[in-house]
Length: 173
Image (cartoon, rainbow, N blue to C red):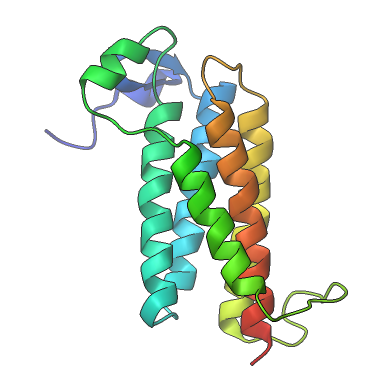
């Protein structure tokens, strides 16, 4: 199967299970913002190493799961579950919260630096990812509860907090 299906030429795009919506629909705007967030994580990941890169890999996996949830047509929850797709829930949220607590341990971040003021390339990339995460969160809040679960919303909020902390930590040099 080719990636070039030409089905989008008329202004519609596919959801899971054969669903279709207009390309400008709020659901697609949210999906696109999360996709862009995942790409910005990739930009940061290429200049990371070790445990932090592994954490980012996990985040990217969670973002793929989150995008699956957002790509589900209304009323297809049971089909989604039967297909074995994952969901973002309390365990993923707690994981990010623990990650934030780990970064904050023994540190006191004060004030607001201008992105790039003191940090290097990694900090700048993380700040960019943070702003994209905040936009993705705003786009997801525009969706109905049937499309975007509270878990998805809270996860994105915590993730943007984690990105701010990661950027500040990397600025410490």
